[in-house]
Image 1 (cartoon, rainbow, N blue to C red):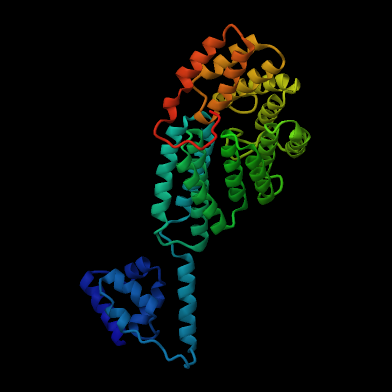
Image 2: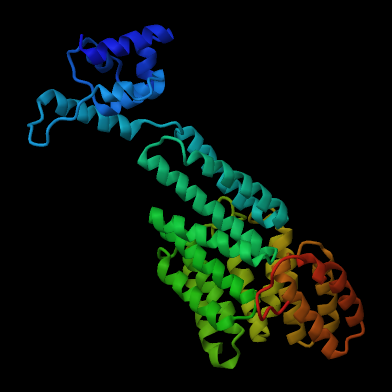
Amino acid sequence: MSEFGSEVARLLSERGMSLRQAARLTHYDASYLSKVISGTKPGSRQLAGALDRLLGADGALTDMITDKPAAAVMPVDDDETEAWELARMATASDVGAATLSRIEQAVDALAVAYPGTPPAELLGRVRRHLGYVARLLDARMTLAEHRRLLVAGGWLSLLAATCAIDLRWWDAASARLRTAAHLARETGHAEIAAWCLETRAWQLLTVGDYPAAAGLARDAQAAAPRASSAHIQATAQEGRALARLGDPARADAYAALARVEALVSPLPMPEQPEHHYRYDPAKSEAYTATTLSWLGDPAGENVARSVLDRLESSVDGPPRPRRAASARIDLSLALLAADKPDEAVGVALQAVTSGRLVPSNYWRAREVVQAVEAAGTGEAAELAEAYREFCGPGVTAGRRELPGSPG
């Protein structure tokens, strides 16, 4: 038995620990560890370090392993030892596939909850999961597990940014988007990277920077895998931004709608259409309704009615009341374009008083209020009062607004 082996055997005896226990806790093969202790196999500094930590030897075991001279030829046994060590490091993990699967399932569950959960409530849940992911990053895991954990963190950061935008918490949204984009680069995840660009485009759209929103939406399309959900969403987002730019971009807005239709038409209905990061036909139709209503196209009214019926039924998934509230804003704008201001007020009142509008959509409701006031509609005062009650400035108190915010 070598000096190193004798010392390891002594420490194991003092700690009342068996060789097999030590092998399991250090993630080494028990037969290999037995040969090292008996002196028939040389120990490595990696093994010595693991045993130092396990047995509380304060580095004494590592000091007993002498480095080989640089010019020495590695014996066959040492070559075999290094191979075992590399294999051990590639498979040793304190995380495990089951934990990662649960995290990934939680990410999907949170994305499914997004359309029906108040953003502040959902953000709290997302932050708790992000904290858990951050703690796990300090654990020992394989490279594949590390990437899966970073990807989960990327999706969670992206969803946290989306909730923050819904609440008009711009600084928090920007920080979360930067984190998500960084994790997308670290993992080479093109879809998360594209969603980051699309989400930023949506944020700029809500504050009135339409040229920049259109540009970022095009960047997102370029970054996204072809025909992916991120690619389709970015195309639809470009169409909405172009619709806000008026006549010079009118033809381009219609072209974007045509591209979305071509991308969506061959898609099957997803198993969970309410999943925020999986595109579904109802979402495509909703974006078409918004774009047409902003273009003042008479076709917008029928599309908006169809969207509302679809979102409030169970034809393709559970009812989505938050998206339905947004669809009512589209319908009210389309009704105004069709010179039906009285019906527009009634529809807008339902949206505003539903409690389902999120702060990032208040500016759209405000546009309806301003339009019915300009039209001199009798119920305009009632709608304006409801807007002040449900969408008043106190909602975003204490948070910095972006310059040029329309709402």
